[in-house]
Each structure stands twice: as C-alpha cells, then as structure tokens.
Image (cartoon, rainbow, N blue to C red):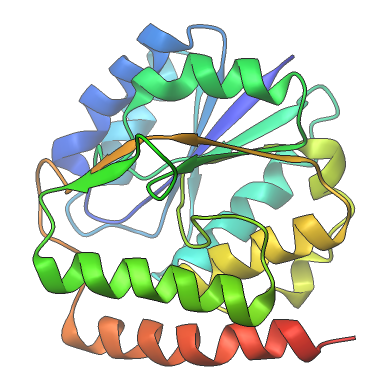
Length: 237
C-alpha cells in the first residue's frame, strides 16, 4: 500500500527537519508532502533543500496563509493526481503527533477505510495542555458527537489515515470550514460515505518547538465554528 503523509506548515523551520527524519525512520517507504503557507521563517526553503536530496519528500508552496482546511484540501488535491497512492495520512508539524504510531496506522488501514489516532479512547490522552484547554477539547468533542451523531470519540483529532478511494468520493469543494471544524466535517463526510473506521489510542503532546498557533482570535473562531458546525452537519441533506 503506497502512502503519502501530508504535513501542513507555517513557521515550523525548527521542527520540520527532525520530524521528516523521524517519519522516515518509522515509515521509510512513505512519501511526504509538506504544504507550506509561505512561512516567514523559511520553512519552505528548508523543505525544498531536503526534497533535492530525498525524492520521498515534496514541497507544495502556497502564496499565503489561509487556514488548516485550505492547506489540507490543496494537499488532498495534489495526492489525488497520483493514481499510485492508496493511503493519505494527516499529521501536524509540531511533534504533537508522534511518528512512532505510523506502523499501527498502516496495520489498521489494511482493514479499514479510515484510521484515527484518538485522545479519547482508553489509553489515549494529552500532555502539556492547560486544564482549560483539556476541558474545552474534551467537552467540545462530546458535544460534537452528540449533536452531529458522529460515531467516533475524537471528532477533532488531526492524526488520521484515509484510504484514497474514500477520499475520492468526497466533494472537497464543499469543505468551507477551517481549523478543528474542518477535521470534524471531514470525518462526518467520510462516515456518511460509508467508510469503515478504526480508532486507536495516542498520546497527544503539546508542541515541541516554536510558537503556538492558538491565538485569542483563533480560539474564538474555532469555538464559534465548533458550536455551529455539528448542527449544520446534522440537518444537512
């Protein structure tokens, strides 16, 4: 099964080299697609240099920062142009998602359409978060599960493996949400498309290096989207 790991980046120059090295340690045959939103710290340049030496690494440069959802859609669209890729994996660039879980994801993906690394199944959890952020994430996920009727425990978790055959069934142009709401809607559409799903426990670590992307404005936007998005999903035809 040929795979491609999509890693959206914005100002991740301090993390991306070590992350790529660790990913290729646990998944030496995978392809890596870094989608960079014109990072001021030159992340794109670092990845470009790596791609010259290692053909497993590809850079997709975008003109400006326009959100996690837009970055992933750009990555998905590029992957879908390659008929040899069977599996796409979503991964954060800040070591929140440990590459050591990749072998487990590949194994589960051999029998499931979607594999989700979950903080909210037995054995999963978070490290390095403030109490308010843990509470917001936990109760937000519970709210989304109940309102949208999502049969998964971690609705907003971003460490996922998706069969390309299922991804092709989705209308990516309809993904008009960002941030955590984007991930929630993606999972909702996959489940609605009849995808078989497996969740397994992961420990989510707060970022290793660099500044957090969570600002007061982004928290407010994600909160508002998180409140409305499950209702829109539930009542959409």
